[in-house]
Amino acid sequence: MDISVQEGYYYTNEHEWAKIEGGTARIGITDYAQQKLGDITYVEPPEIGKEVEQFEFLTGIESVKAASDIYAPLSGRITAFNDALEQSPELINKSPYEDGWIVEIELSDPKEVKNLMSVKAYKEYAGGLE
Amino acid sequence: MQPIEVRLIPYKRLSGYENMAIDEYLIYLHERTGTPMLRVYGWSRPAISLGRYQRADCLDLEACRRDRIDVVRRITGGGAIFHDDELTYSFVCSDALVGIRDLPIRQSFEKLNSFIIDLYRGFGLRAHFAKDMDKRIGRGPDKSAAFCFSGRQEYDILVNARKMGGNAQRRTRGILFQHGSIPLTITIDSIRKYFRTPIESGEFTSLNHALGRKADYPELALRLADSFKAMMNAELSIDDMGPRDTDAICSIVEKKYIRDRWNLDAGTEDNEITRTKAAQ
Image 1: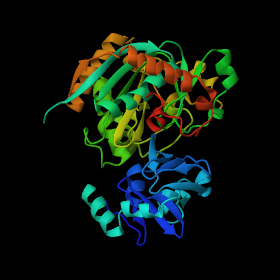
Image 2: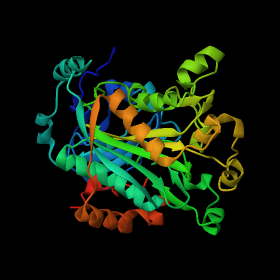
Image 3: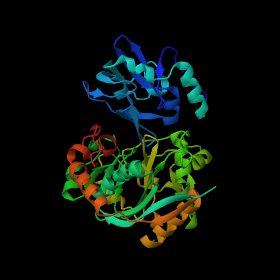
Image 4: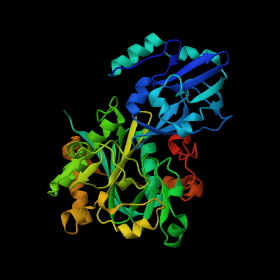
């Protein structure tokens, strides 16, 4: 599987990414994850304001008659959901690192980033799964 | 390769609420024990199950209420299924155990649905994956539909070129859960009145129709177990659930599966025991 990885992002072993700017992180799933899931038909809009914990359930996603979980790369409060996904969930397939972002989180503990993978580490990790 | 050891939960006919609560409980049980489980079950009264995120407005809920058709939401994806004269199975295991951890979901259906193909072929039926048939007739790509049997995806199973039954998955933390239906009869006219979307009769079939005779449940359940053992390289040992399981399942039925909040409001979050550990 030929997969792309975005420079400057952080990654989880469940194939989520986080793009950190100041005290906020934009969250999505990686190219590897979208390829594995296949055609995405729905993303569950999470409650804005909800607190999430690192590596715990963030929201649900459906593809090819399978309902799967997405986990939070970092702890914090959900401040935004990508509304474009309600009409066009396939944005995640087309543009997993940009237009297909899922939520934004106001971080409660930015130091947690040390538990995430760098681009280099994630490339090696995802490459080893193929 | 060593066969995988799978606990077989024996056949029972229960309501839609109970059936879906047990299926969710199996994931919880697997999280705690690591035991792969196969369950075969039937339906004590007719029910329509909606996919995890499917909107309930595809149904005529008033007609369902009037005719006492239970409407229940599944934890798996896909479209609505009318369950009545049907054998249903569910299977839970770690995704690594059956070699699908790194497979795209589409291809995992190919691996897992192979035992259903084997089951149908054992009856002498011409069973294929839709992708093999559609290539031959030049049919286009996937089609989704509110009524599952009217939809078409490449690893759906066709018998005599018509879709038979449906299969759907739930994935959580390396656990695979799949359930699927094997309809013995489908009475199209009685189904249509519960759906607001049109249902074409020529797109799907049922086991009895394809066989030209009435299959019986014990025979079908036995054959299903044999096909599962052969195609999944599994050994099955019958082990029913006990009173503690029953108590936990009753609690899940009460808290979730008889509630409109779960059944009718798609996308109600944080309401699965695999997320909230409500059954602990």
